[in-house]
Structure formats: structure tokens, C-alpha cells
Image (cartoon, rainbow, N blue to C red; front, side, top):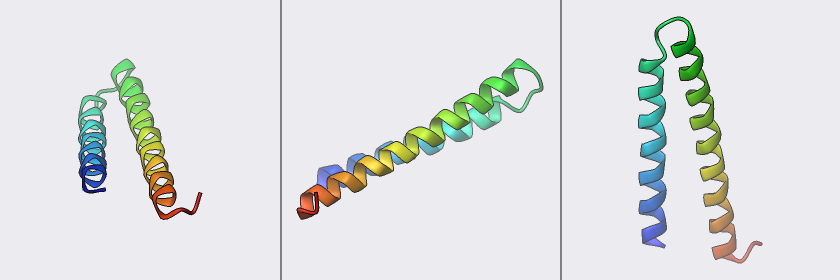
Length: 65
């Protein structure tokens, strides 16, 4: 269980850092801004899916599913 928590923290940190880097890279107008927005959206969706997976694993570990 401890390894799972550490993995979740590391993945969450990676998603946050990626989103921040994408935001900085996407500050320019034009194609770079569109690409940055797309990366931001992808990072948000990935973060949501990781959180959902983590919740499912916790539920399974508790015997709720």
C-alpha cells in the first residue's frame, strides 16, 4: 500500500509539473498557444483518470468493489 501511495504522489507531481511547463511554453500566440492548451487539457484529463484509478484501487483494497 505504501508503494502505491508513493507512486500516486510521483505521478501527480509529474502531471502538475507537465501542466506548468506546458502553460509556460504555450504563452505565445498562435500554434504554440494552441499546442500548450491541448497539452494542458491532456494533463488535466490524465490527472483525473489517475485520481479515478487511485480511488478504484482504494475501493478494491477495502473490498467495496
